[in-house]
Image (cartoon, rainbow, N blue to C red; front, side):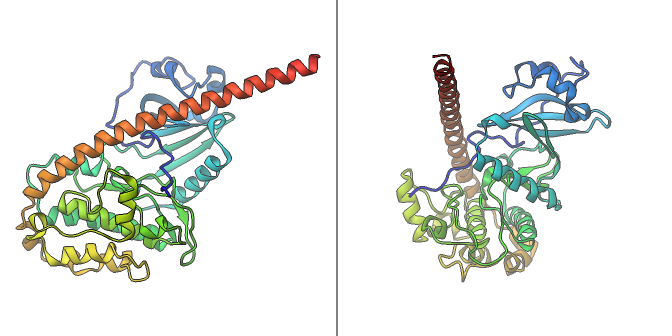
Length: 378
């Protein structure tokens, strides 16, 4: 059994560094020079009739996915810039559409300083447009490994921000279901603390215990009950947070295997440890909180509200700032470099596979139409 892969084969949410667009508009319809090569193929006629393009101007491409492209997006009236996820309807299946509508509905009601904001969702004849907060600071993990000095207090501040966002969605009966480093973003290059939770593509309403059953998530971060095919709830998010906490403090993941089946076996057995080389100087409270999250029994796993009130989050800041994580930071840098490389390779492979599938599907549809026409003329 394998975990359902992310539905974003390449990074198609706005985590890329900001790209300025040309100040010389090519069209009053809201298309600049970059749009001529737009893979979502917006025609000039469609743009001129579109309520979306009456308000916004699309700019440089930030990222591409299987059926979407993320671009810089400027409000014509205010000059405020956003990131816009442009989704081609023709490339979407019924499951994709259902997931998109669910993502939209969840994001529109979320209002928290540490959750990426969806400002507007626009449906046009051939496309959907999601106008999102433009996150220009990149990924949290990339910012951490760029540091020269790193201590346990720095790590705790990151964890508190994550728990704050997660507690908000859990209190609103929403499970994220795909917590991972790629979904922890920074709003700008100016602050290390303005971290936001992103990508609600797998998020789901969770009104009661063990009400979810879809196997989804990302290998390495997914909870064991999901891998075992059991019903679950937002306690699965706490497992993922525990894994991320382990990495942020220790510098490497608690579960790691090149073979995915072996990786899943380790996760299902909660087979991990705090290696003395990297964990001997770490406070006992930090290790206790991680262990409370990476707990095999979801019934005994700590809740987000309990985690926010854990002793480690209240520990004296001076003591934590004195716990140097230099050795762990060096290990973190090695892990992050491997993660980024593997992510790039998988993204290219997945995107190429999706393009081939879509090409084959369109070719098959064209052949079928030709056959029908031939039969009609016979």
